Image (tube, rainbow, N blue to C red; front, side, top):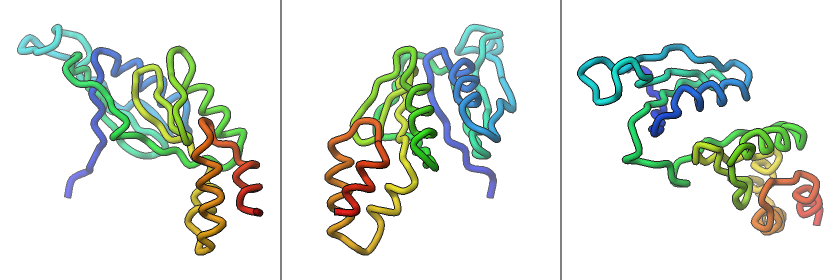
Amino acid sequence: MKNISTFLWFDDQAEEAAAFYTSLFPDSRITRVTRYGEAGPGVPGSVMTVDFVLAGRAYVALNGGPQFTFTEAVSLQVECDDQREVDELWAKLTADGGEPGPCGWLKDRYGFSWQITPRVLLDLIGGEDRAKADRVMATMLRMQKLEIQPLLDAAAG
């Protein structure tokens, strides 16, 4: 089987977005840029696709035009080790036109959705103690950016 890559359709910001995303995560880089030729449909010489790696996973960004836009139906979830990491990524991804959303979700300046999730949340809601998981979930549902301490407090009861 060949590699499977996530393909992201941008209007005309593929290279800019890939450069931004790769600046945020270790083990990330742009690996290839292809350009439109005379056959089009883009302007000859303009960026067509950008292959890039985020935290070791392959993605492709396409400058496909304005026909399609991102929706919340597709997002990238980032598991964060601590509140500092949550805060840092949240600030960078919502900067310059990004928008905070509910429950740890946000849209970046390109309209792409991200879930900035402290790893501890996944442990707390995935445990066998359903009463604790329900308390944590109820607390999380009232948040935009996720805050670890209130989640831990809810878990403790």
